[in-house]
Amino acid sequence: MVDWAKQRQAEELRLKSEQKAPGGDFYNTAISRIDRYYANAVINAESSGDMAIAKAASMLGVTLKTYHKTVDKILEMA
Image (cartoon, rainbow, N blue to C red; front, side, top):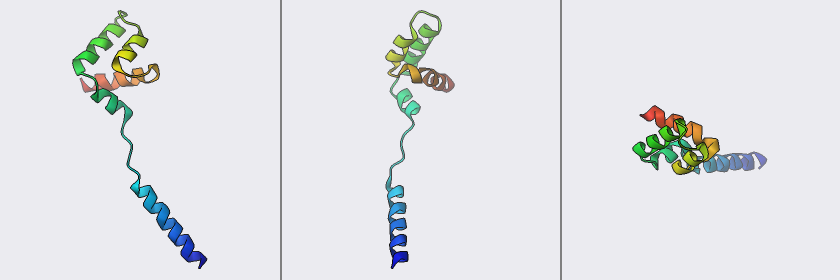
């Protein structure tokens, strides 16, 4: 009887884990929301010192923590 209960519990856990939808990629989602030309203009203004990094991050819709990796991903796509 115990073996049956263990097997059923294991099967239910397996089914639950299979039903979870995979999460998306934060950076791909963020980049898809930004026009490529707009992003390049913001990045160029920030890198040339014409705009503060906090303002650039805000204009791209990302946080300071994620700004550099977002910029790297955008530049990889160009």
